[in-house]
Length: 404
Image 1 (cartoon, rainbow, N blue to C red):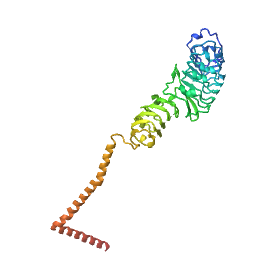
Image 2 (image 1 turned 45 degrees about the vertical axis):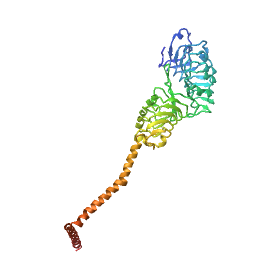
Image 3 (image 1 turned 90 degrees about the horizontal axis):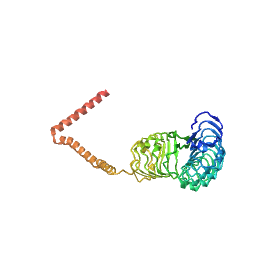
Image 4 (image 1 turned 30 degrees about the horizontal axis):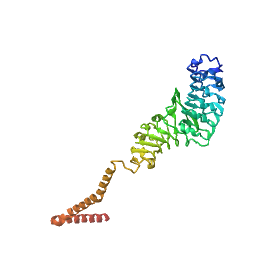
């Protein structure tokens, strides 16, 4: 049943539930509905209720039996009050999206009784307290977004072991900040579960933006100083608007994506202190806007691609990669050392020996070629001196006449 993207208003009565459990999906999103969430939204397979004015989740407390609900999106509404402690009836729930509301209070312990939950998004509310320890029972949880709340206390130690995609931005955790936390993250993540496209929250120029279909417009990605493992996803080269990419100080392995040169707007790239190996892609030399580059402390090898861009950086950019060679490093690539030394030797020989020998022979031939002729041939000697006398007289006469 799809009633989305209209201008429907008012509250929705709790009709008798007979027949609603036969529906696979209900879509009431992007309208002007208000009041409590209708009870039938909790018993179908999928419920889309986002972008309305719903104000209460309390109707979920009226659910008595286990339901078929697997997807529930009530984001961008006006939900207020505390989260109900009645989640134990939603054993099949896989995706729960409640971000951008006015929810307050602490997390109920029953939130940990969702054995199939994969995505839990409660960002941009007014939730307080700590994350409940019961969440560690949710072994299928892949994405946890609780940013933009007022949570506080230490980051739970079990969170790192479960390797979730976690966002704790703008809370009051005492043992975490944006670039140095103890949360383990594994790449890549393709962000699609049962038709739900994972959104990315990004703070750019002081403003929090949500990127979904416009992910290519992302300007900056900073995941430095975490525990990222795996390879750098090749899909990252499709973010054509990317200006800054920082994946330094992690445990990334594999090779630098071959098409990284597609990021023509890239101004800063930091992949240092990882376990990347293989050659530096030639396409990177085509990024002419690159002003900062750090590939140090990896396992990269081979010749640094030749071009004015990559050779313009200081040698410290490539330090800590013993198998890298070529300018600006002093280490010569195999096959270039012998050629260079031979050329240097030939050049030095030409200057120190051949040059002086040629100069000496030229002097001897020139001097004795002229003087020897005058010494041994008398008629040539007389003619030569007669010519010199004639030139001298002619010059003397011209000087006298000039003075007169």
